[in-house]
Image 1 (cartoon, protein in one colour):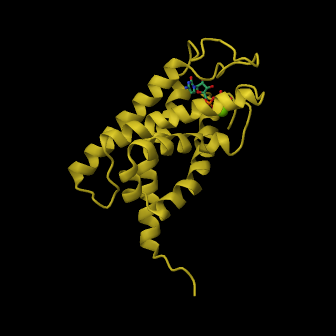
Image 2 (tube, helix red, strand yellow):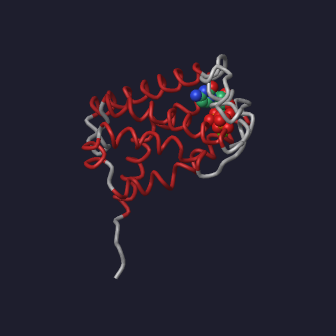
Length: 186
Ligand code: CTP
Ligand code: MG
């Protein structure tokens, strides 16, 4: 006896995972594209003498990224409503804001830990680099929109999020590297 999952629900949950995570995926790329200028830590160092976040975390990247993620989420809400596409999971204004903000706060927190480990800006840190924004988004969602998480995010959707996130991350970073937006392909 095995676990039988119809192909249709596998596909619907895959699309649902992408739909839910889009406001969390967008901020990273937008930050990489628009980032620059004054770093969030203002160039300051932590008590270990190393940078708090590093030059890779800037105010412009943070605000442009969060803003873009929220904008995309609002568009998704409008599209789902206008088209009556109830097959897609419902996003709400607070959920979209938490997804986008959580993504870049997760990225920021990761850079803080990365610096404490003595890793240079842009150094590769597998697993953390791929899942930082998912972790950040879900931590905020679980704190402020717990009901939404438990009713909308099914185990199958969660499975897809875990599977597709590193793949998409890799793909987008290779594209960003080839386009000259990112210095390294990770
Ligand atoms: N970026 C930014 N502000 C942010 C996040 C990202 O300006 N809050 C921009 C920076 O130009 C950064 C690029 O996006 O170099 C890629 O982001 P990321 O890979 O997260 O940063 P890294 O440079 O790799 O730095 P770290 O080692 O701290 O992850
Ligand atoms: Mg990086």
